[in-house]
Image 1 (tube, rainbow, N blue to C red):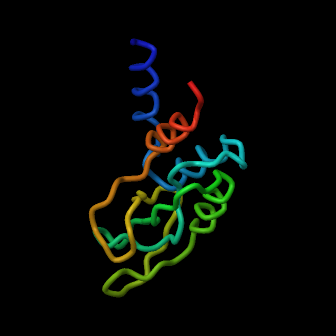
Image 2 (image 1 turned 180 degrees about the vertical axis):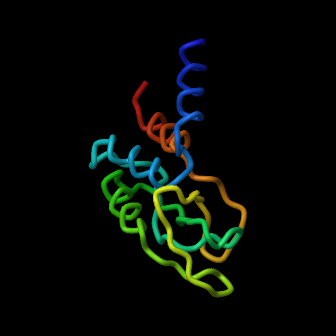
Length: 122
């Protein structure tokens, strides 16, 4: 059990485990053809905090496709739900949420690792 707790602590203490740079780094570490049960699509400004990034959930999408989508957001400007332009960068927090909604789930390295673990055969 201590190995599991060490892994959890390592992930949660990562420099940017819930930020775009950490998401990109984690996706880069995965085989590009790995199919995730839930991935990311349609990046947009998060309605809850316009200066943060959100992705809509996408079923059965490869890690390579998710990586391409995530990388396309680096240094890109998005329009907030009620206006304004917001530039997203490596330290921008990320969410998994439908466009135009607040709430959702904070997207993190930990969540990606859980999704990858769910694809592994036991």
